[in-house]
Image (cartoon, rainbow, N blue to C red; front, side):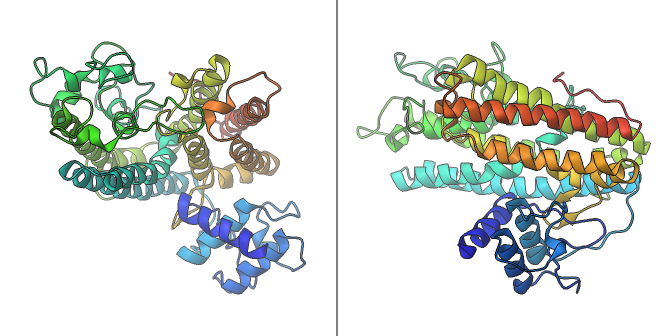
Length: 449
């Protein structure tokens, strides 16, 4: 059992790239030597299992229990090392936030690069194995991106009204008939309209994105998702597009196979280009980019933006758009990653991103964060906010998979009960984020613009 818990903690740490480290000590460092050893991790696992042991350092919220989240923190510190930090200052938290976003977007680019490579290889020589490799790369690329979404909703480089590329990166819901064939319409979409769109290039996708309405999405993660999985017509699994949709000649399925490959490659290139633009805006030491302007702001204004992104992601977006809308409509089209049945991963990592911003952490970037600032003025509120974030993440993990089936049935069904519980916890979290801002003398909105 101990191996299972430790393995789960290690797996989570490697998956989400995040761990909590105290501003005063290193979480998981049982013997106080400045590092987390295997022996320290074993002590933490034993405490989690109720098998005895003595390690206050792993119980970071001092509630007398060791959670999976706390084990993840200890494992991350074992992998990345403990980074001692001094007392929290507002300017220091702003700098740390910028640093964690640059690190986070770096991982996003790594995933997007691997995705483009897999797509190029698949289109060059379509096969079942190649299609699966491209799907795997898409799935692997998502967690890091989703953890950056707490950096939206304040006109930053991702969603600035004039220059932000977010609408080309992760826009949804998507009308799949705008892109390619669907059941009942074999000639639907841009792919099957060579007379209108002779060449399919990244520039064409930019021009056509949201060309007719908010759902006529031509680019981004979800366009690529549809092109890899196809429509999700199954109650028990994701879409099942055949790889032959990309095979030219008599053995190919559907029509315009070469154009479908052109579209997939163009979308992958555009996604990588757009994400690179955003990453570069958070690069340190670059005169004139967003980061330079952000850290030069009055610290309270920078914190207002940070907290607005966290609060709106928690309230208006994750609770409202991504959970409540689908819960209310019971419509698969209202779930976030509906073609791949990956929506549960979206919800989990959006929440992890909110926690990261609050705690000032991402991979090797650790503290101080908003938690430390609030702790200095209202320790009870700081701990309550941190704890409800853990509870919200636990509630999100408890939602049955796939999400499109969890939303079905009466309100008494297990899936809907679990979703309702997660929504309730997220509402509490959103309130705590707003109260944390208030404690710092900052006013924010937590509703979507």
